[in-house]
Length: 336
Ligand code: CP3
View 1 (cartoon, rainbow, N blue to C red):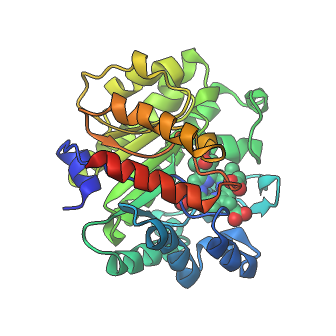
View 2: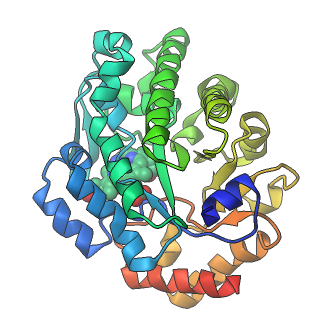
View 3: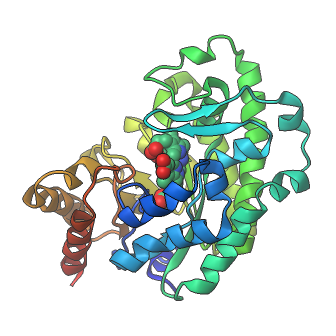
């Protein structure tokens, strides 16, 4: 069994390593293929190119996992909401189509994402057994944010002012179903592990946390656990801050990915959970000495715990790949 699966399922302390956004613009070999694919959504659905790009980081750094090159917003494009990526701006979406959003059948929905599953099948056949294949999806709240705001939000949820809470809950419920179906299909296509990105969990007001974040994550985790007990889920409620312990206790995923604002000393370490990540990706931009020192904080803290080395968010585009290599070597030597 792969080291990541052992760490998540059997709580083995074997220190696997992978990175969020390990495939991406910091890699010259990614940029080369990206240039040929002007349309980002089509790029994600291009079976050959997406497979190649998914494999680039493990070929280069010998990481323990391959994460499929894809995007959380593909779910929205699959229900008829147009998604474009503008350079230096990010995603720009059209208004969602309510009829399609609510009435598309599961079959029609997954047919629009067929290539994602083809990419996973291809990757599964190409990677050695000791490496894990990670599939992923956005959590319902984070998808709702893009669906309604039609671009990355600023630091507030003013865009929600026009939407009644009842309507929000209705959308989240529908997204919960779509996310589960998409995760299930990814598992059936060969994904060993699912990561759920709730990148905008930090925007939720305390009083809405259960309905917007905890319950939808919990429902998806529970459904996957019940049907696919050997396919662990890692949750990433970014920005959840002091409510991290509450999240772990209620959602009970196999793994929890920490963002760089989580205060380690406030973490409840008594829960049966594998921790992941935490290191601020900005430390890969500065001196190696500082990068190692900051990485060591996480390694020391989780020394006696099941821990997956990763960052507190994705690798930044301006990162020098040689720093990624040095960090990997540092973590691997710590393991000895
Ligand atoms: O981690 C990996 O290597 C796998 C690929 C992956 C991408 N997006 C590819 C991508 C993953 C796991 C994602 C998840 C994703 N996408 C999230 C959740 C994680 C997070 O960052 O919080 C979110 C919020 C999105 C939506 C999204 N996609 C945004 C906001 C942007 C623009 C910002 C940016 O980084 O450019 C994207 C584009 C995107 N997704 C790129 C990549 C490699 C860059 C596109 C390019 O090449 O121009």
